[in-house]
Length: 314
Image (cartoon, rainbow, N blue to C red; front, side, top):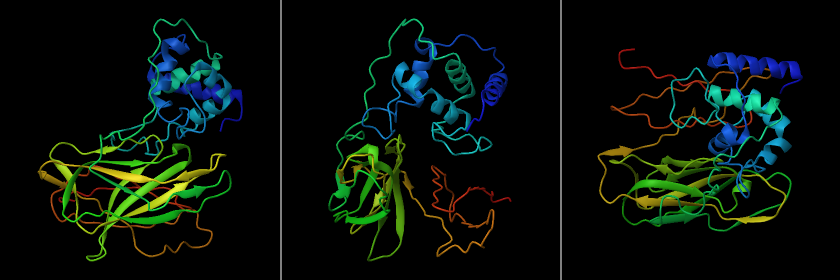
């Protein structure tokens, strides 16, 4: 949070200096509209997961102080990986030049500029973006979401109904009402054989999972999808029946995608008053592997996560 205009200007100067460019006149039509489309509107559209729209210059002007604070604090767009991390695909954070131009534009009073070329209308994501799924598994009954208050985390199971193994090349989790879906995690377990495998997750603005050609995830018969659901009221009552869709591969893949849940198992014992209690977990890969995705996830007392890869040669 920025406590004064002096602090804001200091950040603005530092961001500008980091890019090595001199600030120039920035306008909505000349620059900011494109940044808003790429970084903001994917969540902040009417009926979307963002709590308000960020599609027009009026939207930004009305929320200018809050937007400025979010940019300075690096909390929007949401991307929690440390800047010191190795380069990561799907980085949603603002680039230094985007951050500089947004702050400069906000400080200048959000000038509109000349509309040389309007962006085409934003088309909100809807429906099955992976194409028509070959299998859809929904929670058995809709969940009543009240207009206000706190909704407890829910764990709901639903069988896949598969009677033969199927290879999956694309996955999408869908919420009927994106405004109330904080996040969804999906796992598959096999009661007759034990164990479970992480499948996919949904966060506001996240894309469907589509594996690269030649890679697929295996769903075995008798599986049960376990949904971890976190809903947040938006002021209106809703009946929400979250679902997950799978598109099957037409032939067996060259490489199998496998997901593993890495945790210490059991409860964490955090000493009273500890400022930062460290918990370690190590996993040894049994075969040559590629890491395609990592999803650190914590609740309540979680503070930070550090992931280190130790090569076979140490």
